[in-house]
Amino acid sequence: MSKQFENDELLMALKKSDKTKAAPILDDLILINASATATRRKAISRKPAKILVSALGGVAAFAIVTGGVVAINAKPGMSGNSNDGPVRPLSRLWIPDVVATAGQDLAVTSDWNAPSYRSVNVIPAEDYIRLLSDYFDLHGEVTKSEAFSSEDSSNVFDVFWLEDKDKNATLSVFDSSVMSFSLSFEPQSKSDLDTTKDEAVLKFNQILNDFKSRFQPTDVLAIEFSDVQVGYLDNRMVATANQVVEGHEVEIGTSATFGDGGELLAVSGSIGIFSRQDDVATLPEAQAVSRLGAYWDNPFRVRAIDDPGNNWLDESPLPRDIYCENSQNIEFGSKCITTVDQVVRGYGVSTAADGGTLLVPSYSMYHDGHFIGAVSAMPGDHPQK
Amino acid sequence: MDREQFVTTFRAHLQDVSKFLSRRVALDQVEDLASDIFEIAWRKKSECPEGMELAWLYKIAGFVVSNYRRKSVNRIIHLPILDTDRSAPSAEDMALDGSGIALAFRALSASDREVLSLLVFEDLSIKEIAIALGIRENTASQRVRRSRERLAATLTSQLSDN
Image 1: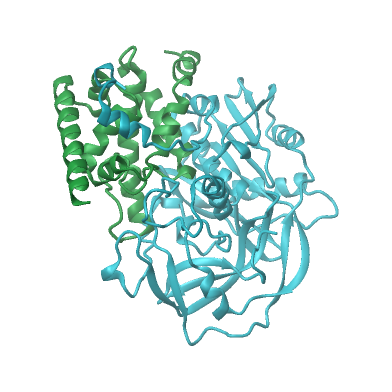
Image 2 (image 1 turned 90 degrees about the horizontal axis):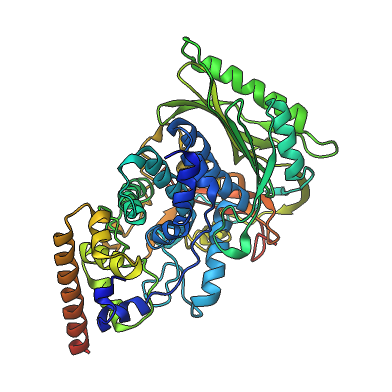
C-alpha cells in the first residue's frame, strides 16, 4: 500500500480483512503464448482453457476448487451460493440455486439400464506428444512445465510442450486423464484461395481419421467422433467434433482453426480412451430433478452437449436464461423456483474421485424448451466414486 | 521488447495478475482472462510506462474483467446479479472476513471499491492507481481520499445502527 497510508488504521484494518485465496498458478507459457501473434494466441488459448476444464472435469473442477477452499473457510451448512458473507470463499459469478419440481410428464420409475465409462491412461503424456509431433512432422526438444495451471496448489499437473522453430509451431500436451493437446502454427505462407466450409470439413475429417488410426490402442473402446460442425470464432473458421463413445456423443471435443487462406492454424482438444463399466439402473427422471440444486459445488451436475453454454462457435449470444417462476423476486442469495417439464437422456462428463474422467448416464433438464442443467442419472449419493 | 524480454519483464507479475483476477472472476476463468491480458500487453507493449508495468497490466485487466462480466451476464443469466460495468471486485465476491470493516467495504459503490481495492489489496501507489484507472494522479488521489471517507462514514453508520 502507498506509504502515505501505511499508518491509516482504517485502511490497514480493511487490508487485514482480506482472506487470502488460492489464486491459480500461472507460468511462463501464458507469456510465451501471448507473445505469439494474436491469431496464434487465440488458437492456443481458447481451447486450452476448455481443455483444462475438460481435463479436470467441468463441474468437478469447481468442486475441487470449492472443496479445497470450503474445507478451510466454510462453516457447516453454508452453501457456495450463500449470501451470508463472511465465509463465502470464492470469487465467482452468482447463479441461484435451483429448486425444481418434476413436471407431471416426467417418469417416476426408470427402465433405463446403462453403463458408465471411465478413462484409462494407456498413453503417457510423454508418448502422446511424440505421437502428435510425428504426425505433424514437428521437431524440437520436449520440455515439461510444472504447475502450469491449477485451481489450487494440490491439483497441479504437468504440461509437456514442444516448439518447432523452423515451422513456427507450438505443441502442448496436458498430463491429464484424457489426452488434451494444443497445436498452433504460424504459417510461413498462405494460399490465395478462401477455404470453404466443405474444405474445412474435409481437412478436419482427415485429421480425425488419422488420429483414430494412430492413437487407437488395442483392447479398448474405439475412438469415434461426431459429425464435424463448422463455425467462426474471432473471425476464423473453426471445425469441431465431439468424441463419441459407443454411440454416445459427449462433451469432449477437438477442433481445428483455419486461416484466411485455408491454412491450418491450430488443432486442439481432448481425446479420451474409455473402458466400459457395468450397467446400472438409473435414477428415475422425477427423482433426479432434485439434483439440479446448486450450480457450483454440485457433484451431480455434469457437462452435457445439450448445454448451450458449450456452444462457443460463432460467439453467438447465448441467453442461457434460467427460467424461474419467481423471477420477479429473485435477488442475490435467493433461489430459483422452476418446473422441469422435459428430460433428455444423454451422457455427461464428470470427474472421478481419483481425477479420472467419467462418462455417466445423464439427464438434461428443460423448462418450456429452455435448458436448465444436466445431472448424473447414476444411482447413489455421490456419482464420482 | 522482444519475446524473451517480454517474458522476463512480466514473469514477476504473473501471480499479481492471477490474484487480481481471482478477486474479480471465477477461479476457472483466471487463466483464460490472464491470457487475454498478456496478449493485449504484448500487442501494446510499446505503450507500457517503464517501471509501471504492474499498474499498466491492471489497467488492461480492468478492461478485460469489465468485458468479461458483460459477456458472462449476457450468456449465463439475465437476472440482476452483479455490477457488470466495472472491474471492481463485486461486493458479493470479495473473500473478506466478517468484520465490520469488510461489511462496510461491501456496502460501498463499485467505484469506491475499485479504487480502494487497488490501493489496499493490490498495493498500488497513487501514481500507479492513476495509471491503472487511466486518470490523472491528482484525480486518483482525490478519489482515494473520498472513497476512504465514504468507507469511514459507512462503518460509523453501521456501528451506530448496531
